[in-house]
Image 1 (tube, rainbow over the protein chains, first blue to last red):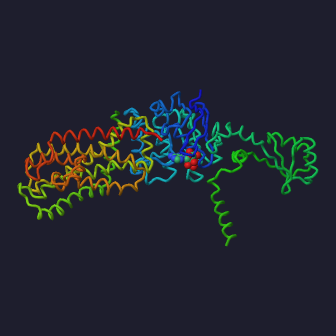
Image 2: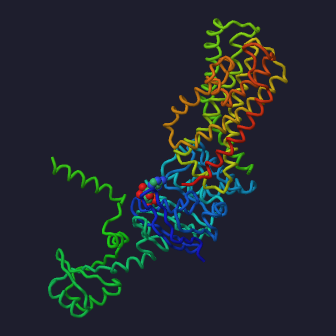
Image 3: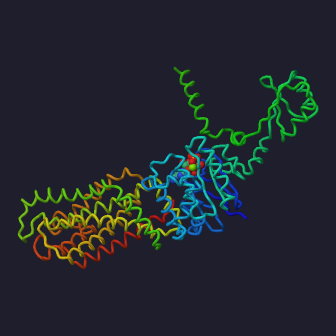
Length: 324
Length: 254
Ligand SMILES: Nc1ncnc2c1ncn2[C@@H]1O[C@H](COP(=O)(O)OP(=O)(O)OP(=O)(O)O)[C@@H](O)[C@H]1O
Ligand SMILES: [Mg+2]
């Protein structure tokens, strides 16, 4: 059953079309990812789905309720972690959660227990009476996820949940999020521009300039860009190249002392190739396409990767030195 | 209306109010400065023909000032909540916008009334002799007036997105509201145009109602400007109108 259903959604802000005719469905109990660069329209789509914004046209349903006409029903069914923190920093972790529990009318006799449970769940129980302003970015993020879960939502929206976290906290948060659907019977709709993160999704929609340009499981999307690349180093590259081209009809190229070719299923191709040209092989490596390759192929540009910011700075310094 | 929502919004404000000692301190210090410095200075200039000194005359106005500043301050913390995102947490919840507005207005009411009551406790120092009934009446008037002013503050807050507008609100709305409220000088002595401004100011009626209760004289330049029943009607009516406008404003979507 589709728990989220979006039909021809359009949102314009003046001249900007932030969301341009977007349609998709999300199966209950799965993780659905919206992957796209800055300004692609991810947050705008979430704002429409969570009833904070009215679309210019199109329709959206959550758990069968119309996001525009039945906003009260939709609000009950969802939890959300916004892109920017929405905690009250002058309250303690626990007070933030209690506030939320009251807003969502969690029964008084279950409230304390539930708040303690979600605090333990995100490993913040021993910090529960600390003011949120004393928390690190990762702790705040975890607290927000906990808060979003308090009222047993059917759909949890996560807008760039790992924004600004270090690699270690990101991994921890992802392990935690990946388990949510099974443990809590919740469907997850998340956005990110980290490619690696999108891999935990059951299905992904790649969005650019307000339009969905590809949709499918991570494997399907990667296959669509041409599959795996096999790199082989041999004692005689030229003859190995000829042999492989003749026997397997692959298009083989050579670069930096290695020959390489693209094939659908790298892991089954490698044994066959080695059986044929075995005596010449020095080394073999297999490169799987990443979602980055998918994005590059579909849009002709790479998504800005936060993780490579170190490299960006190096590049910048190099360019700067050249000019001076 | 959902009482759980109203309760938790008020509880949040109250908790923050108690934690922020400096806010309470400056909220109490401001009216004291006016009362004992401005009041004492001006009382030399103003003849007290009705047996009421100028410092005594401005006492209801100073209570009104306490209410005005703390109610507006409480309400425009909504702008802060918008800027720091917490407002989204409230708006995305399955609660009626009316409950949010009433909760917020009651928050302002409670913290303002507490502060006004602290100032009111100074009455013996000023040479007043108030009965228990008078004290209770003044506190009730303070509460109703705070509600109206807080609701007005919420309407203001819906127009602004960032806290930079704070000084604009203070200089161009709050200060004129204070000076044109009958707090420092009787409305009936104002020039025509300013008198009209004072008449559309809800604070004027709150202060006027307190003058009725505290002074008990009905003639002379320092006497109340309106009938008590008019004061009461305006305060209640403006409360309802501001709450409705604010709820509508929160309903609005981009
Ligand atoms: N309230 C608004 N008024 C005007 N334009 C807006 C508004 N909100 C978003 N936009 C525009 O809509 C487009 C999509 O923005 P959106 O926030 O949805 O992007 P995003 O995919 O979430 O990007 P990011 O990865 O940076 O969060 C952008 O061009 C943005 O400038
Ligand atoms: Mg965004």
